Image (cartoon, rainbow, N blue to C red; front, top):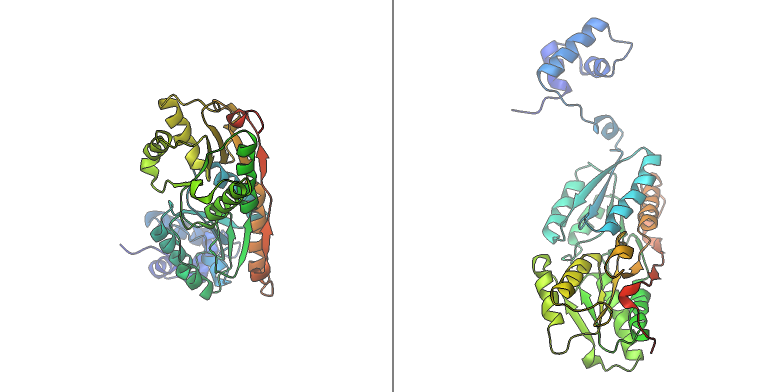
Length: 339
């Protein structure tokens, strides 16, 4: 059955589309008798109003899309709150799309966004994304796009990120200062810029400390379903690290579970630090040391830039790059004697 729209109602009632539209909006220009006929038929045919119709006539959907790899991550939940705080002041709806860390999903989502459904896109790319063609096609439709947290290099547009390289350096130096000599960096991607930048900072700190490059451990856990098994394998290896840096929040639970199952004590046997915005970090056993990103502020800043791009045709998003620093919060998971 085809979708019922205002034209269908108009044809069946032998009225103009304009009259139907005004009746549905309870306009004073339309008689109560006509309004009653329109509403009765609309109810009978299960007519659902299109919230985008009037705004689309003005070439504005009053909607933005937010494309995320996941929402289980506390960072993205906080970022959405920041985005929403700006969208509400602009009278805009926010559509949340999840790529589930899959490039194919992300590509399909951006294709959907080209239909005029949204006026702009905020995106944090998936861990699988290593090409920019789908993003360039969206930009070719003159739809403003802003990266936040996770960016795709090679695309000329605004981005709001944190100081990932410096934070990788900070995390590694923190472990070294707490007595670690074999820290390892655990990543979910070999191409995601935030992971690569954090890892490069980690490597730089170890090289500066005199640790040979061949002894620097970088570990990839790219499969969510087997992450716990991969972490346990790392912790049972002959060259087990004495410190772990979790590059993203989702690695924290597998690390803590693996240590519990293998009876490896944190922080006595291994020290753990994570890039995370977990509210539960202070109450984990032991409380987790974190590099905490300003998620709300990142979302808010990204949305602010996007609306400037939507509202002002002269505003050049390509020139906008905002870096909001993260902060280290030391807790018991890395306590120990300084070197």
